[in-house]
Length: 201
Ligand SMILES: [Fe+2]
Image (cartoon, rainbow, N blue to C red; front, side, top):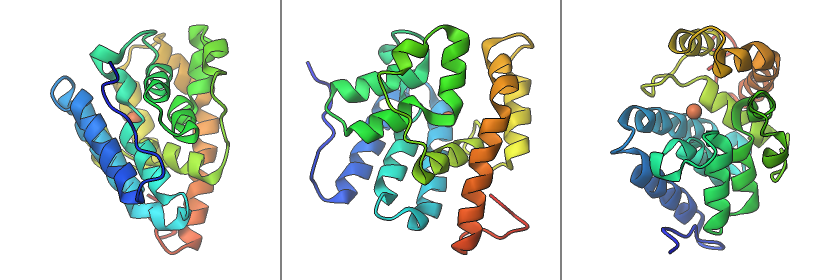
């Protein structure tokens, strides 16, 4: 049974509302802290969305859905970007949305560490400003949904995971790519007047 279908070709507000309710359904009860983080990432996306028209709602939807693969009942491989993207594809979500979720926040690098590169290659990393913006929203939002500077976010992830863990290895390998995406986004947002140059988040 299909638990949920992401509407296509509906008024754009429908995409955001559907994405929010799907994320809430799978995360709010089972992983309340993750749900707070997701709501914070969604709020960041809403805040900067004007700089990404006509993909503004796609960005917000991806922000709301990026961590849905953490939901215990959706876990298959245990690699949440891949599990989340596959679930979205299975319910008919837009392919760009699936791929943004699959490749969010340096997932390609973590997939290599986990031996899941071939599986993740089912999805194309679009490497666009929208993709960078999704990474930015995730990397400037803490585990309770609070806004953080990029460096603070990296530090708090490091505190939550053991040295030698996959996540710590991922941060070591992926730091430069994450930072570059955040910096590209910051430049765009400063140019758009959406963030101050001296407070780039
Ligand atoms: Fe996240």
